[in-house]
Length: 318
Image (cartoon, rainbow, N blue to C red):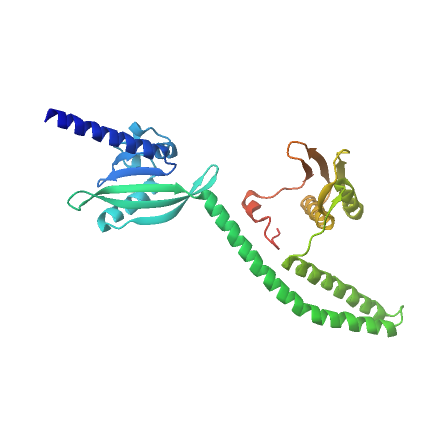
């Protein structure tokens, strides 16, 4: 009889140790509380999350570990699971110093041999990366819808614009160059062409255009853009400082699209400065990653932290 008890106790200890090892290796945050919401068991990940050791947690409640607001929320959820006997599954966002963290939380009732609920087992899984991918997918779908909408509107606008432009050019042929009518018609023609260009840009944005990748000199491409925008910038005393790597190798890519990127970067920097400032452009070669590195910096007011997440949204501007 004594040997049987010792054998049973040995098996129980081994199983308990095995369970502890398994839970300790799990990246999920696991905790067990009794009906009074006192912690009975926690794993290593849970301890790391709350910043306390297992000994400091066992025998305590959520009010000893979390803020009053969080503890009250947990208490309400846990009591609901105990009283209803139904699991609770939810996604929770936790604000932290390093940004928001998303958890997939599952709380299930724990029963004894008589079918009575004796506690709550809680498991939380970090799904922050999954949520980021989900948000990116949502944004991609939103962009697709915007692109389709833009394409439809642009095509509708193109027809009347073509008519306005055509008639203004016909009238210009009969108007005298020194007359007021001629000047007015030239204004109409100019603005119609501007609208046509905007519509063309919108259509370009809305569809996937064919890229032509070639080897080209990045330094030369940047210099071509500066020659276009430099004079305009200088009128507001905005200086462009250049620091090119003379040994920068040719880069494979769509030259025109890359030049458009530089135009946008310079224009954004110019808008941020307003007047009396410096835009610095630097090129270098990262041998480790075999990459060309281009940096554009300005002395402008910068981007407010609350707007950082929106900078790549179409048509967003401050």
